[in-house]
Every structure is written in structure tokens, then in C-alpha cells.
Length: 471
Image (cartoon, rainbow, N blue to C red; front, side):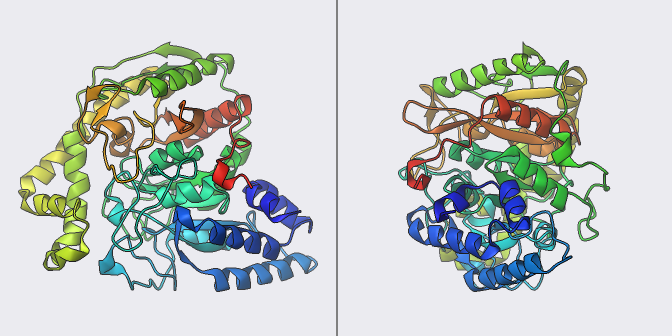
């Protein structure tokens, strides 16, 4: 098997081939590291742990050859970790010069569990500072580019992870999502992304977007995401808000039927000021496809009030608290982020507390909606990927919009903590990916994954690859 084939194999296929001794973990790791080296222009990885990855791969190979050895479900499969997630003995910068030399002494729970399952960490992927914006660029490592078009952003803040998976630079990636940071780059990179229920995958240490930030998988297939959920989804005492353990096998749960599910399709959700026409057409067509899967699909446009000010206060309050002690080092804070930090530090405490009250009150809108529906479908992002250098769209579909418009469909479900995924559902005329968001009831990760898998089976996306990663 040649290196290109190894780089494009799914994690589930790789794990099976390695267990059957058809493929060596060393071959796999070497193939992916070589590919990372040839696609440096993407700037997806910012810290490689190549030597340790090769050593781990050799140990994994020895285990395969040892008779009677027990292999984990991801034995020998490479993965990447977003640079907001701590990794033992591997630099974690949070995308900031302030933490340029930060080397944690422990792994985050999700990293620890992937390693225990036999997966091999290759390194860290790029992110904006503390995940503050929906594109990927920072003062330490610079810009990450989209494999489908180098002149466009992969989104953010898990943009390095999205670009890596889309370009065949490891089949598994750990991302985080405080307002769309898994779903947005997954949608713009043409891959699958799941923001699991808040607490389903423990987050430790708490992120700047505490209470909003979810951890989750970014993969090329739904089954690979389910494999990551099997490994990562369990409580951890370091995160007191992590959810209790369940007996769910997420991979087996993918096979269930969708027949009779009540599904709502919403083009604007009552909060999006505008949606790009190509995005609207592709996602509406994808939503209609759920009828063929046995669902009862109907259009629904709730008249929800926008919770953006509430979300922004909580999100920026966390970032402001983290960076306020370093305001004497302004040259080490991104120019676009600096005024936000200054604004956050000037907010009265009552503003932050009121945002929490408003958040709890706003949940009643979503609660009532999901009493009627099992799933909600929306565009993942209101517009196609932005050109490099543009942080927010000024207009969408000819309508002037504010900075929250592109992410209008995603940040809401960080406030509610509901599971939400994005599936690739088409491309613009310019060849840029479009994603459909699938939102489930609170804690119902299984139905979101099952719906994602059913759509994938009917409309597979993995065979289509970006030109930069097709060789």
C-alpha cells in the first residue's frame, strides 16, 4: 500500500488493517509525517512531535507482533490536537506569544484517553489566540490556509485541525468549540465535525470560554467520530461538570433507523440576518433529503430573540480574564483581540452576572422548540469561506451584516449545551465546501450521530478530496 493510500484511509479501516498486520503503525506514521512536510503551505500543524510519534509507532508495531497482546480500538492510528488543548511534554501555546514556551506536565483527559486507546499523537494544530475568532491566524505561527483554496481561510478556531483532516494529515483531530469552532472549520473544510453535549467529553483545564467550550472530534467519516466518542466520552474528576458515564456504543448506535423522527429545517432560525444564496440552496436540498431517510421534515422559522449579546459577554469575559494580567505586553496580543480584552476588563460584574441570567432564560426558547422536534437542521455557516485576511463578512447575499452573522447558527447551541454536528452537503460554484448543521436534544448525541451517518450513507462525501491533498 502506497503512502497516499495510507494517508486517506479512515481511522476505523487503519485500526483494522493494523490489527490484522496488513499495515504497520510505523508505515502509517511515516507516511502522514511525510505528507505534513510536503504540505507546509497549509500551516495546519504548528508543533510536530515527530520523534516521539515514531518511537510510539515502533512500540505499537511490537505490540501487534506480540502474540496475545491486547490492542486498543485505535491502535497505531495517528491523531492531532488543537493547540488550545494541553499535551504532556509537548508545547501548548494557546496561539499566543505569551505562552510560546509553555510545556504542560499532563495531558487533557481527551488526549490521555486517545493515547490509552493506542492512538499516536503527531502534534498540535493551529488556532487563533484562545480561540477568539472564526478564522485561524495568530502572532506566533501566522495564517492557516484552506486545502480547497489556499486564498481562503479554513475557519476557526479549530482551523488547523480542519485543514489537517481535509488534506489527509491524520484521520482524527481533537477540536474545541465555544461558538462554532469545531463546526465552522469542519463545514468550510468539507469534513465532519461534532460538538458533543457539554460535559460529554471532559474539558480540563477550563478554557477561556468556560461553560461555552465543548471538546469534540473532527474526522472525514462519521464512524471515525463515533470511535473517538467511544474513547473520549466519559466523566473525569478534573472536570466537575463532566457528564456521568453511559453504556452507549456510539459506533453500534450509528445503525439505528431515523424513521418517524420529527425534523425541523430552518433557513434563518429567526436570528441570522442573511444567508448566502448558494449556502441556502445546498442546505435546503440536504434537509429535504432527510425525507428519503424516513424523517418527517417541515420548515420552521422560530421568532427567537438574538442571544448574541449574552453569549458575547460570557465568551469575552473569559478571554478578558485570561489576558488582563498581560495588558502590559500589548505587543504580544493580537491587534484585533486587544480592544476586546480592554472592553471586557471594563465591564461591570453585574453585566457578566446578568448575561448568565439571560442565558438561563433564553434556554426556554430552545427547550420548547425541541419538545416538538427531535432534530433541527440549519446551514452551519451563513456564508462560504472568507478570503485570507478577512475576519468577518461585511455583507452576506448583498445584505450588510454585523460580525456575528456568519456564526449565527452555531453559537446559540454553545449556550444551550446541545449536541450539534456539521455534515458536508455541497460546494459553491467556486468549489468551496458548504456544511449542514444537525442539532439534537440535550444529551442526545446518539441521534445526532445516527442522523449524520444516515445522511453520509445516502450522500457520501469522503471520496471527494481537495486538489492539494488528492495526490
